[in-house]
Amino acid sequence: MKQLNYDVLIIGGGFAGSTAAWHLANKGLKILLIDSKPWSRIGDKPCGDAVSKEHFDNLGMPYPENEQLEQKIEGIKLYSPDMSTEWTVRGEGFEINAPAYTQRILREAQNRGVEVMDMTTAMKPILDNDFVKGAIIFDRRKEEQIEVRSTVVIEATGYSRSFRSKLPQNVPVAEDMDERDADIAYREVAYTKEEIEEPSYLKIFINQTTSPGGYWWYFPKGKDKVNIGLGIQGGMGYPSIYTFYEKYWRDYGSDVDRNRMIVKGGALVPTRRPLDTLVWNGIIVIGDSGYTANPVHGGGKGSAMISGFCAARSTLNAFEKRDFSSQSLWETNLCYNERYGAKQASLELFRRFLQRLSDDDISYGMRRKVIKEEDLLEASTTGDLQLSVADKAMRVLSGLGKPSLLFKLKNVAQYMKDIKDLYRNYPRNPAKLDAWRADVKQLVSEFDKVISK
Ligand SMILES: Cc1cc2nc3c(=O)[nH]c(=O)nc-3n(C[C@H](O)[C@H](O)[C@H](O)COP(=O)(O)OP(=O)(O)OC[C@H]3O[C@@H](n4cnc5c(N)ncnc54)[C@H](O)[C@@H]3O)c2cc1C
Image (cartoon, rainbow, N blue to C red):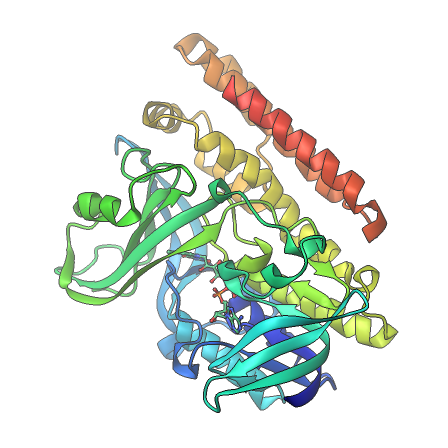
């Protein structure tokens, strides 16, 4: 078998892998990025395609432009299940053409020395003395297997987790997940029959009947094109996502011309806290494969970029130290949890709570402003649901007929704070991971008991 040697092998060229490549390029390392898809389809996956501007700013990544940018976004309008309340949450972002943007980032990385092989799949890991040392890959163009030896592997295979799942089960990054901690999502992109009134606002519709445990979205891609879809909670035995789509799409997109459809498709997205550790000896896991998406809204492109950035940073440091052990790559966890993971853990609890609410509870809560737009924005930005909010809600509303809901909300806010504190004290080295993980598991299971009462 042909053998190739690299410093870094990146598996997967989506938002996570391409960002890692972009940040590693031109730093004196020999890097190969592979993706199973042909070049023209890299970055093409079912997605709402909305990404907040702050991610690009925070990571020094270029904004999407020209054909990569379909619509500048000024904010989100959120609708209650009974449609009687509309909240506007302001915030800049982009509705992107994901393949065009991803391919631009890859091209830039390529121009700065990263080698890219499309139509090439990582088949299995190479393990040596408890270290990942590369992968056996298959090049579909040449129909040949190649043994790629690399010092670090960055695994960015998306929800498929197709590489890390082939590691032995006792390797911490092989951790599997509960299907209920994922959303099944489906979307169509089509032209509209009329001009969209406010294309710079994304619309989100919460409704437990038409999208149980998830929501519907209507994201304009310019004046006459829209990305419309829904997510529902996985593992619950609900009917297929297409059944929901066919039954309810007119409620949210009556102007959509399905005869002029551009693309359609579904996929899964993780809605939980990140992998307990994103690293092991010689390997870093990033993006959806590391469960980095936002548990409440399922947006995962921005956080995939954060994880790619953190992976690149700790890889460069590992090469400085010439140490590629779990201990040396550990800083990926610290970087990611500080920037996003702690908030994700807190939002996982919030998501578990929200999924148990009835349409009545949600409509009531939004109408009465039990939580206000600003609090929601704060919770979604930082993962903090202010206790003062819950306190105030308790005082104002306990006389209005929903005391148990409000009591729960107060508890939810406290648990969200507690889990964030645990993440702030994320272990500084792998030896302490098991004890920390046990604390997190206990907190989550206690929380589940409290909200199910
Ligand atoms: C319907 C839907 C709507 C969504 N809406 C939004 C949204 O509006 N905004 C947002 O931010 N996020 C959204 N998300 C989530 C977002 O799409 C993901 O979080 C994000 O794209 C993850 O990026 P990634 O790079 O980790 O994975 P992916 O984009 O899935 O990339 C993984 C890549 O790895 C390649 N690959 C896999 N296995 C191998 C292998 N063995 N060898 C070689 N290559 C391999 C694949 O071909 C693929 O190109 C949505 C998700 C869904 C399903």
